[in-house]
Length: 267
Image 1 (cartoon, rainbow, N blue to C red):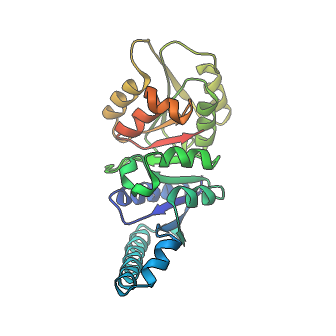
Image 2: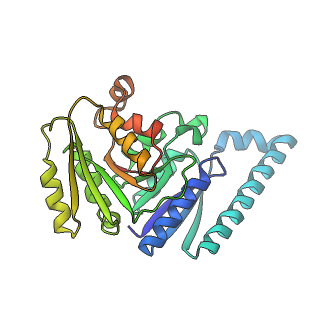
């Protein structure tokens, strides 16, 4: 988990993304691959270049990108981490989906409002489906987080859940306390003990906690993470199809909407 892909856009979520990426890079002695996205498309470029106002607008967008790069590189330099820089033009989900295949972990925000209307409300789910690599989803205004302190693994035994746990092992191995939590009755997937055995073979001792039924898993996770504000959470993403999850209100979407701690997710 030493190669992080970080979305660079001058938006409300960038400070939180940057802070979390720096924290993980420091913890793992890793490097941050900064990827700045220009969402203008070819048609808009043609229209813009044909008018004086359009050319002025293009110049403004370019200067803003340059100023943002200078700001981000100043922060990274002060933090003492290693980074690289690349620029791309197009839709955020498409660009990051292609780039994520060549990195260990991609850092974006939980809230879709952090992105433009062109990405729509399904940016995170599009990214989950575009790559087999995990995502770290950061709340928009996340305070300090200590990834070495406490991690919760939300367990339901499903393939996405197992995939997320396996992908998170390099970070979990550097975390002081790991708690695996199963809310409600066990389903058809792998047992909580089976997951704990896998972690133990990787040198990670996990505390097991079963929560009786009657509460939705996301409600329990949100309440517990609110009490441990410097923790982070591992969970599988989108157990149902995107349309069904949007209609029925799945655990994943509730966590994306309300989580106050970083979410490490995989599908």
